[in-house]
Amino acid sequence: MALVIGCHPAYEFGAAYTGPHPGFSELNLISTILGEPVPTTKAETLDLEIPALAEIVIEGFIDPEKMPYIHASSHSDSYAPLISEEPFFDVTAITMRKNPIYRHIQPTRFTEHHSLAEFITIPPLFTMLQAKGLPVTDIHMPLHSCGNCAFIQMTANNPAEVREVMQTAMANPMAPRLSIVVDEDVDIYNTNDVLFALSIRANGIGSAEGFNGTRGLPEPLTTLIHSAQDIRSIPNNRWAIDATKPSLNEPERRLEFVRLQARGEGAVKLADFIE
Image (cartoon, rainbow, N blue to C red; front, side):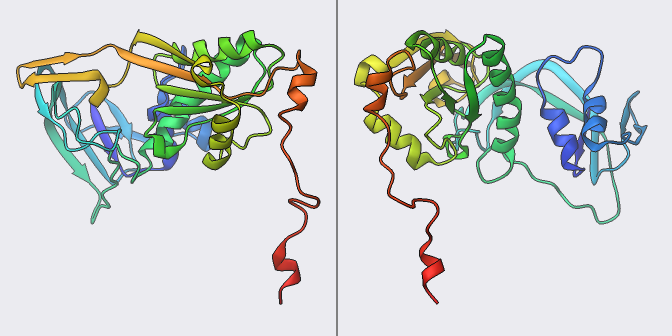
């Protein structure tokens, strides 16, 4: 394996992509994003073609025997899991250009890590929901949720569609742990707007559903550590909240949830009247 550090951002998107791609490799995906071939060169100690344009390349082999690994940080903005069983990487060579720039991506919200996580998590979920014929228009993973929450925007024809969206999101093998379903009049890129929907449209306990025992990433709620030799995974629990208006099949009730709008809202700006 070769670890490539410091390259075009398209390389990072290609490497992070986890969907099915029969017939093409990550390098093919990267070249498609770039619109040009990816230049490669022969690795120093491995029988691999590696990207020729990079700051640093670390070559080596993955040791299949797992051993306790102490974490410096987690995608959940914590130190947990403090210890986990991981394979180690035996380095055979390090090559770099003169005065290389170290490209640092720690798995926290302080780098682009969570943005990359949204790229690999949300498109497959969106495709899955649309393939089911569900009227979903957009999905957003807010970065401050540490990759554990998705705001799903839709206009439901009936309550069954909302429930199927919730169940599909909860069964997704990757994130999100929490899914919040809202209508198209809610700006899913504005957390305050989603909070409005949660506060006004969610019907208490009846709006929430849970799904237990799915696959999930190691983090505080899914890892139980007794000692360095006794590390156990806890079933990952998911939940979803229906914060939508009544569906289109209940037009009269739906009208009761139309949001008030001041005359000229969005068209009149105070700055236009102040010198």
